[in-house]
Length: 396
Ligand code: GDD
Ligand code: MN
Image (cartoon, rainbow, N blue to C red; front, side, top):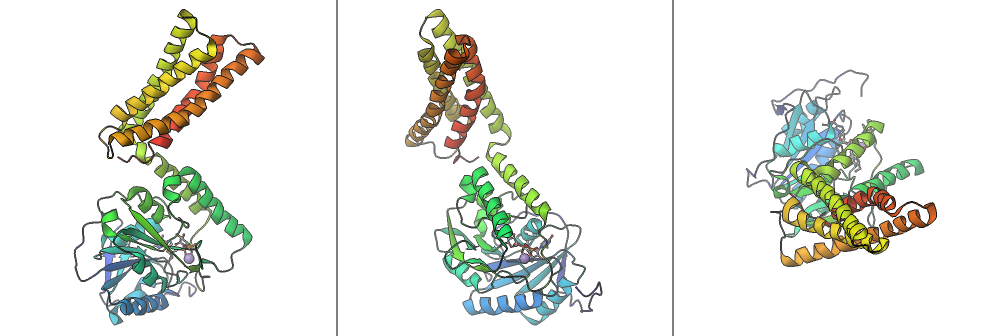
């Protein structure tokens, strides 16, 4: 801020030094404190005082025990020292100075790992998130609700005066998220929100992988979330200091999405998944050769029966082997899955039959060649896609 000159503030011994390790979020320790709100900061010397004062006033008004935890990455502008000054004056403020690490997501997790409250939250340290909205978020946390998110895309919510290009980029990123992670991103209108609260149980003993900037995605994808509530807010313009979001964050966001996309299928399940897909393909081909070649059935009918055999084998093996031992194994659940996979793959099977016929009739390929080409082109996609869609809700 001040041309590299760090203003002198006294460190009242209130600043806790923490290192860069990512600690797990444990069970609740202190019964006095209900809410722990983390404020990640990097070079927010010009904003932190006003924010802390406003939040302190707003939260004091609710009558619930709270703590405000500033997690500062040893900002060169002396943010932590200013926060330390306020902490000496107002009760319920903690300042963690983290050395050896930077990154918004890790800072938030670091704050939560040191927090005492039953409800954990996060708010930006630059004043862009209106402090009074925290009361709406807390009020939304009823017995059934695990997460409450402040949203720019709901009711009265919005952004102050963003350019069309910035709005488009933000919406584009959201659309990409919806495409890659419909189950997670589709739960909220503002998946990019950096202003939300979450019940502690949701994230204890969950391995939060702090790769991205978007900690909310991590919570929604990996936590055991029942209901999500949203409350509108207007994302204010930054009055002082600079945003740390650059093009690198968009790349990071994409990587984050991909990682979460692969997550439920990691390790053993993924290998079994691929084995089943491979087996189904082989079975499909063998059945086809047998009925078409030795039994002399017609092409379309043979391909249809073989394809259907592959579908049933996939369903059976996934249910009994790939995803065995997971929750929701009721008979109804199995039937629902069977119908779902049948529908998804049935449509693609029709596509395959059309491809085979087109190859034979229009390109003059031999029936066996046509079958193999169609098998290679359509079937792996259909098996992966169809099963992926239908086992989506199954978690490890
Ligand atoms: N400790 C720490 N370490 N804090 C950081 C770091 C870091 O490496 N990088 C950024 N912060 C802090 C900033 O000081 C600020 O308080 C907050 O994180 C948000 O950073 P900004 O750089 O102001 O981000 P933004 O305004 O572009 O975007 C924010 O709002 C979006 C809309 O709600 C972020 O919160 C986004 O995650 C959010 O989606
Ligand atoms: Mn900001």
